Image (cartoon, rainbow, N blue to C red; front, side, top):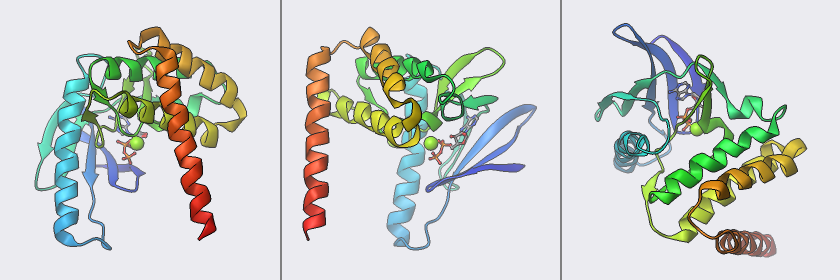
Amino acid sequence: MERLISRGAEADIYLGKWGPLDTIYKVRVKKPYMVEDLDNYLRKSRTIREAKMLRAARNYILTPYVLYVGFKSYTIVMQYIDGKTMKDLINSKPELSYVAGEYLAKLHNNGIAHGDPNTSNLLLESKNSKWFMIDFGLSYYTERVEDYAVDFHLFKEILNVQHSDVYEQALKSFSDGYFSISKIEKDRLINQVEEIERRGRYSRKRRFEF
Ligand SMILES: Nc1ncnc2c1ncn2[C@@H]1O[C@H](COP(=O)(O)OP(=O)(O)O)[C@@H](O)[C@H]1O
Ligand SMILES: [Mg+2]
């Protein structure tokens, strides 16, 4: 492991080598405030889940190759994608979110919810101009439309909060991309998204009342 390139809530991301290959080491670090047994359990299960779902998702979209999974070091070694995140590109090119919609719908059509869809989890590889999706630690198999609507809602929320200047256009492109692929009827999914958002507002309001 050579260089720390990202420190998230859950994991440290290092750029390193695996033999001659440039690779990413994703290391789930210890959380000092958490009970140790629970912390170890969560780090292990999310590492296993992420490695498994990175592989599963590759049947439908591009994801980095997994080279090694360390169950005791809570580490995944994977292909390094040399490029930029959608987060860094979307403010000047909001239509890029079309791909996010397509990728999410491809996962959903095959019974996979991503769990944490956001603009930092899509990488455009410079060399081949290809998009890769990452960060599958909260991903799971599901057939429920409501779970797909949660993914849709989460991405929409990211656009609203992190890309507010281009929100309208980015959301339209995301939605167009999604429904160009999705097997679910548009009205049905949007109704579910609105239901989630109504519940969110209601619970936020309640919290203020106490
Ligand atoms: N395979 C990869 N290739 C290139 N960059 C990566 C790769 N995996 C992660 N990164 C970079 O590290 C950041 C955080 O990684 P991620 O897996 O999303 O962890 P976190 O759980 O902290 O969000 C990404 O947004 C991206 O910039
Ligand atoms: Mg991430």
